[in-house]
Image (cartoon, rainbow, N blue to C red; front, side, top):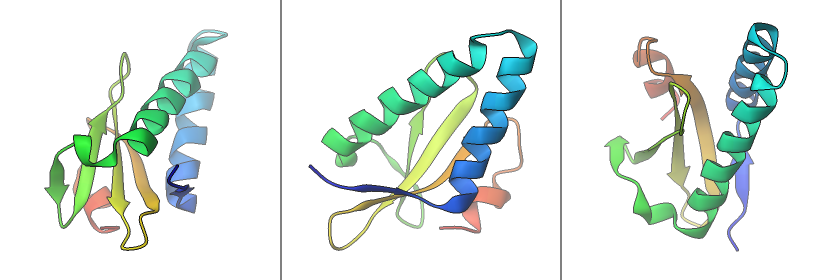
Length: 98
């Protein structure tokens, strides 16, 4: 199976969202992490499944939450997650990472 590498910025975005959801309702942050993990597992199994959105970066919409995961398939076959991005934010922030 392909390896998945989360950039530090993407890890920080997941952590920030987790904390925010957990403050809203105990357990909601854990639900967020579960759907992010499920999306990452799907990416790992079928990375070409999702559309290219910008400069080779692909996008998967996270179920139940207003987030998208952006990732790049590297030449060696590994998958680099560049962002876990809230859909209401300015996309220039994640595009600068592509």
